[in-house]
Image 1 (cartoon, rainbow, N blue to C red):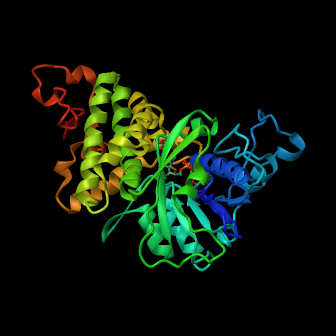
Image 2: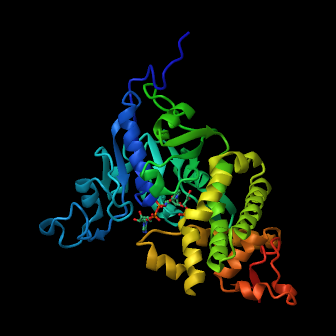
Image 3: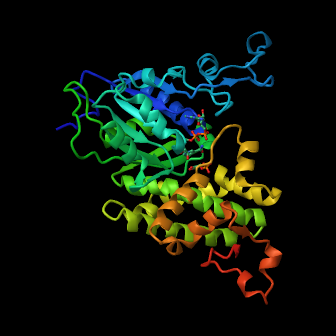
Length: 402
Ligand SMILES: NC(=O)C1=CN([C@@H]2O[C@H](COP(=O)(O)OP(=O)(O)OC[C@H]3O[C@@H](n4cnc5c(N)ncnc54)[C@H](O)[C@@H]3O)[C@@H](O)[C@H]2O)C=CC1
Ligand SMILES: O=C(CO)COP(=O)(O)O
């Protein structure tokens, strides 16, 4: 018997909304806009993209700058919809015209059957509050967010946070995906995790249930290769925790310690990521996800070389500034996730008295809090100063403890 095509036999098509329009939010909107056009039997063409509204002045160097129209700051949504480009967060990349920006979250999610969450993690709770009652109860979601939620009750994944607070199922997407490279259509891979369970409102009979095949059609492009798996915890934790390791790698590069030292950081970082996943999410997290999938070791490698967390940490050492100062001065409104994740992970570990089991995560936290210093290499190599010898396992060797 011939295999049924995804969505075959269902008269209604999925309507997709992207919640978020930063660097990655815009790049994912581009991919989804391309794929809703490429698979018209599965998806409605229009993709709404929710934008946190702000005024933006188009730079006069912009090729579509017209002094009569653009001489003063304008609403970012209006600029995106007229220029088909997110001039602030993903400049010089054309967005498909079927991607429509809206500043109204309730309008953005109204009637959407698939919700893609792609915002810096600190903004999720407020967005969820504003969505209450505006979305379809049978909608399904995918979180592209790299971060963890820490509260008095413990630690949870953002996919679980979104699912729990909206009463719908939410999977995750994460991978070695520097947004600008993906937007420029340079090759990359990603991992999508989707494993719906529990008491969910079923979709109406005329709408295909969201499954691995539909998600592959939604995200896969010739330049963006997707593997769909079921380990949501592994995918989410890989993306969140590698940002902390990328900060440590940035410190090492800022010190000029070289590639071998950075590889040591990445090795210890990967071990801590795996240990964290299997210790605190033991029922769901697979250790292989960290070593076999793009969301694990591959994301760690790319982020420790070309990510914003790495770059800002490196500049903070080179310029003698805090990483937050560098973030404000260089990222034009983009947000680091590794700094808050380091603090959130530490809050969780210290509440259990288990910081010592994760020396690299703890060292990054101590440096960010000013409780420890990134050490100068000349100082480190003084042989008679045993505290300062490079000890990869003990920080790995980067800090001078107070
Ligand atoms: N940029 C990248 O290369 C990649 C980022 N990610 C992840 O994607 C997620 C989203 O990050 P990006 O799209 O890169 O964002 P971004 O850091 O480029 O931009 C910040 C975004 O936050 C919005 N914002 C500012 N204040 C806000 C508020 N009060 N409420 C709601 N939104 C507000 C801004 O409008 C902007 O869209 C993060 O978890 C990040 O770790 C994942 C893969 C790659
Ligand atoms: O997650 C990323 C690449 O996969 C990007 O990391 P940064 O947020 O550090 O740029």
